[in-house]
Image 1: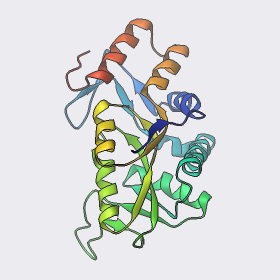
Image 2: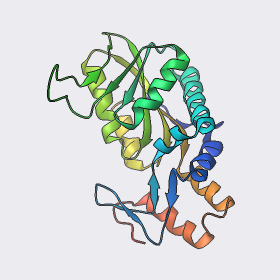
Image 3: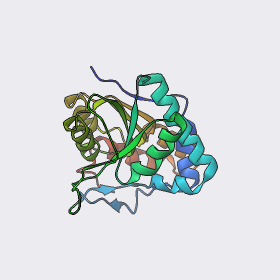
Length: 216
């Protein structure tokens, strides 16, 4: 049975950092529109953390700790393109491990690679991802690595919304996931820092349970 959990030591600090640099924005009254068409009161761009050295280092160290504690047999790191590439490379550097990344689709010229870098058959790989929503693109990368002969030990991510559908998808694909922070910790931090009030918090909580039908 795969494990799906939040790294306790980083859940609150990372949520606070992402709010501080506006990598995560909350707006229940004027929601954002996702590519799927969903209306969302949250916008998440963790790539902004790369522009803040102290926060970047904290996130990298958190991912490294999560890997050491949960996937200690790791032999290589794979990032999910595009947001997981930079963070995955930083993690691989700290761990002194080989790094590769997985494209969303094969390159349309040259070698037509789906996996960039070298992953050998039977190599024990941990996947690094930026953000988990439904898990679809993340798990697609896992399947590509498995098809290439890798043994995927699990995945680590900076943030997860914690949707029921994503947990179901990870269980179905037998993939363990450890995230540095999640939506519940984010809302607690946002309330504590007065980014949102109690009334807005109710709407934000409702979105997480039924994002496809939520209305502001």
